[in-house]
Image 1 (cartoon, rainbow, N blue to C red):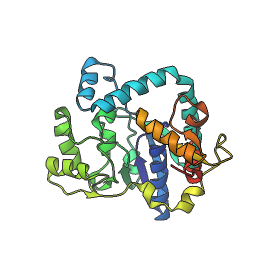
Image 2 (image 1 turned 45 degrees about the vertical axis):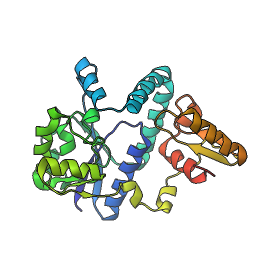
Image 3 (image 1 turned 90 degrees about the vertical axis):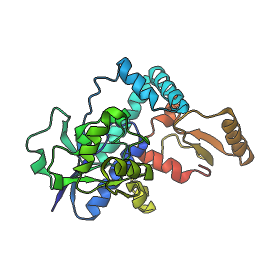
Image 4 (image 1 turned 120 degrees about the vertical axis):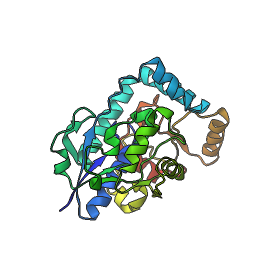
Length: 285
């Protein structure tokens, strides 16, 4: 049986990341591959420098800047909630995702890693976003021979690569054996940098059936007994949107559940299995 190592983001704090990791694993297993996710740590030595912060802000919209500041404030104020959330996400990972019992980093890659797997797949999260991953060689699988490097629907998360990363991205993308991306914008970046045509593929979460997802769902401990309206906002919510949500809930006699509100410990610490159940059981989402 051929062995595949998945390289993705391991931060145990994002529903999309955990679910896409699980989905890609299950798709590959259904194709009779032996699959493991290789735990990797991307060290960010420059994240606190003024240069890094200014460069990051340069490529962020006003809304994203506000979101970043708001997230940092919330993380500071509600550190305990975030810690419990990560604990729940790690428990989900242990139950449903096969991970290596070791980790790698740019400066810590086992000499025999390339021989341990027949192929390596990077994706489908924003592994190629330089603002998050800082141009790590791990995300481009440079430790492996070219014929083992496969990209399944990774995302750049931005529409333009910062100048300081262009030469490295051009080389690394050119050396990828099988190349695909998650968005048209990503295909355009690759075409401009390398001249290669990258196929645009769906996120692996869209490749599993409803029944498969429900098989790993579990009732959320704090899910309302009655009908409810579920919200899930990654950024700030305008006053007008809040009023509209309240109006819909009142009109239909629904309780409002805000799933991503870090101030609400009961829902914020729900794990990915509970996340699936919350969505499946909602009257309005």
